Image (tube, rainbow, N blue to C red; front, side, top):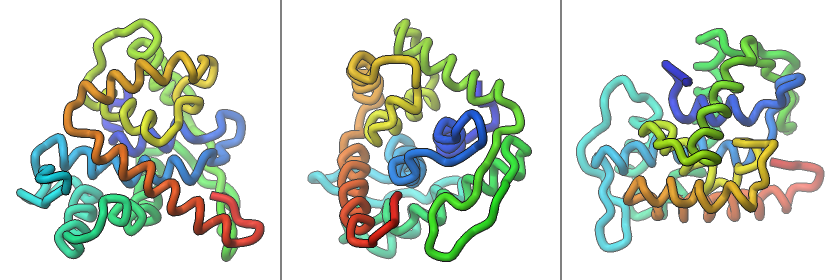
Length: 217
């Protein structure tokens, strides 16, 4: 499932409307996509938790541009809270992820960008079997407790902390899927700091958007 796809790309695919490719839950999806490279850095040991703070360590691999973007932000602003790092790279991470999906031929872009408007582009999926396979593996792990691969566990953790249970498994009851998604997330180890950062970033962006009449995330 999802061979050749990053965790962030999987999140974006799951967030697209199956009928016309309209991005859904853009605020939550954006924060989860921005958090994906931070989670990878933490799990790889490139970023370590010390006294409740995340500290930059070894640089990520050169072929991980979003991880490098996140690491650069952490090194430039080590005093900032993790949610500030997420908010700083969110737009760039989402744009890069859509560009990667376009380059791989998994989506096509329709519509146009209107200044000041969100969601002016649609991204119809060219092969519906890809998101279907993603949801199939998520269902196997969450509903039947199949052991997840590392990347699927990371995907579930990010979806859980971003509150995207409904996008992950739209036909399942979030009240039933959330507890097991939380168990999978906890099984990854040191992810709670990243989870708290996602929640704080979501809260911060929600406040900002609420102050702009007519704008939704």
